[in-house]
Structure formats: structure tokens, C-alpha cells
Amino acid sequence: MDPQEARRILDEERERGLSMIASADSSEALDAAKVGVLGRKSRFSQVQRALGSFDPEDRKRLGMAANELREALQSALDERSRALAGAEQARLLEGDRIDVTLPGRRLRTGSLHPLTIVEDEMVGIFTRMGYRVEEGPEIEDDWHNFEALNIPPDHPARTMKDSLYVEIPGFLLRTETSAVQIRTMESQDPPVYIVAPGRTYRREAVDATHLSVFHQVEGLAVDEGISFADLKGTLETFARALFGPDRRVRMNPDYFPFVEPGCQVAVSCFKCDGTGCAVCGNGWIELLGAGMVHPKVLENCGIDAERYTGFAFGIGVERVAMVRHGVSDMRMFVEGDVRFLQQFQGAGA
Image (cartoon, rainbow, N blue to C red):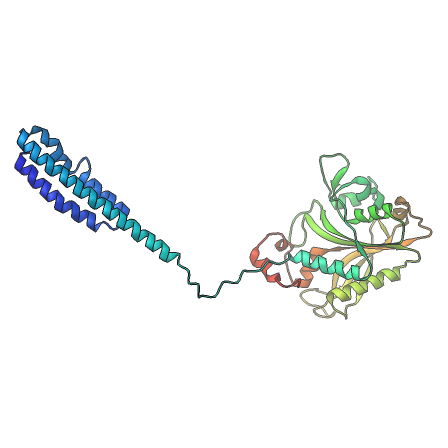
């Protein structure tokens, strides 16, 4: 390369470089332009490397021209970089611009879980009848969960409940809230009128009608002169308050170790009024198990079974919620699907 060619290259690179810089429409394009005009493989760098082979006069003259070109290109790069940064900031500001004259967006209000709504309604019915709410631990000992309820170690009802035991010997996750009834009778003298809502646990195969963790509302009344007629009247009042004033109650004999006699309670369907439909099938909806408290259970709690009688009942909250809201699969209550839960907004108002 001779001095004349070097001068020509410098003039061409000035024009080409300024044009590339001016046409860069992004920071990436600007970086590419910088490499193209000032990078190690650029024609400008080739001229700089050739300066050492020129005579002193040409080296001085072309060196000054090369320095001027570098300063001009670098100045153009800096100016274009500032312009691109300003344009990007303006674009971001425009994208984030808020029209304060537009109406605000109403926040979606939260709501209680459907099981909580149903449980509160059930408990409210009994508290209005004079019952009080009692709660107890979810990890129970064998006495309160089984033996005091007339379920000794060899009783087949223990296998029916498929208990979930914890690492502490003799303790398990309670299979029903009946243990709260035992604790209450142990701690106070009759009369006793309580309801015990809460979570219970069993080793169940989870399907559309069974969960391994579910909720119950159990009731207990112990006083002088309580009869089966009092149990029926109480449950009729509950069913009519929950499902409508025209509900009828049907009681069929059933067995539970802690009551004698025991019964399975059904209410006439609130959809078809007992004629049969898709909700009930035969006109009746099975609701709960109940019965007169077994004398041995009273004696286990230190209550005179000759003087006092009582009744008890247990209601599954999930089953009531399924009936009330037409839910076909119990698992929907615990899957946490917001689309499902949003349907119950305002239901507990």
C-alpha cells in the first residue's frame, strides 16, 4: 500500500463509516457499524498498520488524517448511541403511559372457600338452637379416638376407619371429631349441648366421593330425659333450615359402636321433593349417621348412664356441599382451581 492509496482509503472510510453509523437503527446495528469501520479487520486499521512503512513526511501527514477520521467516527458513534438510547426510553415511556382519565379497574374481591361457607352455615343452625362450638386436637390418643367411644383394640370398626398413625406410639390423626365429644364430657358435667366441627383423616382411596382429609360437624346432647324423639326433632329442624322448610327426615336402622340404637338419616330431596331425580336417585338424600349415645360411652366419661341419656350425630361437610351446589366430584373442593372457587363468591354473604 502506497501513501496515495492510503489517503484514498481514509476518504472512502469516512464517507462509508458516517453513512453506516447514521443508518444504524438499533444498538446492535450500531455495534456492527463500529466493528466495520474501526475494528481490527477494517480498512482503517489496515492503513494504520501500513503507516510504519511510509517515509516520515507521509507518515506524519497520513497519521494526522487517520487520527482526525477516528475522532470523527467515534464522535458520530457517541451521538448516534445517545439518540438511540433516547428513542428507546421514549418508547418505553409511551408503553408505560397511563391515561389518568380512564376509569380504574375494580379489584376482584376474595371469598370464603365453599366448604367453609357450608360448615359455617351448618354450625350457625345449631348455635341458634342453643348448642355451643367445641374444638379439639387433630392428633389424638387411642383412648379419645377409639376406646372411650366403645371401640376396643380388637373391634372391626378400627379397620373400617383405616387410621393414619403418627410416629408417637399410641397417637394418630383423628378419624372423626367424636373425640371432641369425649373430651367435653370428661371436662364438664351434664347438661352438654355442643357441635364439633373440624378436619378428620382416614386412609381412604381418593375418588369422586371420598377424600383422605375431609371435614365433619358432629353434635352431642346429654341431659336428663333426652329421647330418640329429641334426636329426630333436632335433625328435622336442621334439615329444614339447611335445605328448605318442606324437608322430611327418614331414619333407617344402622350400626355405630358408640350409639345404641343407631340410624342412618336421609332427607327428602330438595330438588324433586321425594319423587326421584338426578340429584337423589330415589327421592332421598343420605345426610348423616346418628343415634342415642351408648351407655358405656357415658360411663367411660364418668357420667351416670342411669340418670342421663343423650344423642349424637355426625355430618360430612363435603357431602352436604356437593348436594347444596350440585358438585359431582368431591376432589374439586381441594384441587384449588380458581375458576371453580370463583363461582362461590357471595355465597356466604
